[in-house]
Image (cartoon, rainbow, N blue to C red):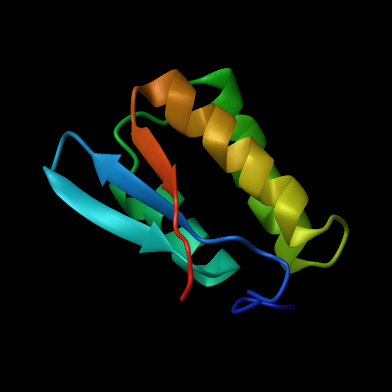
Length: 88
């Protein structure tokens, strides 16, 4: 299992409106934490797909970048602003 995989994962900044906080998702572990503990709704189709994709990425069944796309769709579904984080 690759909880901290980040080499092929472009970081995503999320503005969680319910907590008025901003989070940067850099690893699959970060993503799992946010999806399970901080996501505003747990009943959307894209949310469920993102959770499954996170598990699949952690177990090596899909590439981390594929999970990132699922996370972006779930963020859109939940009305969460998502930004690509550019590294310097």
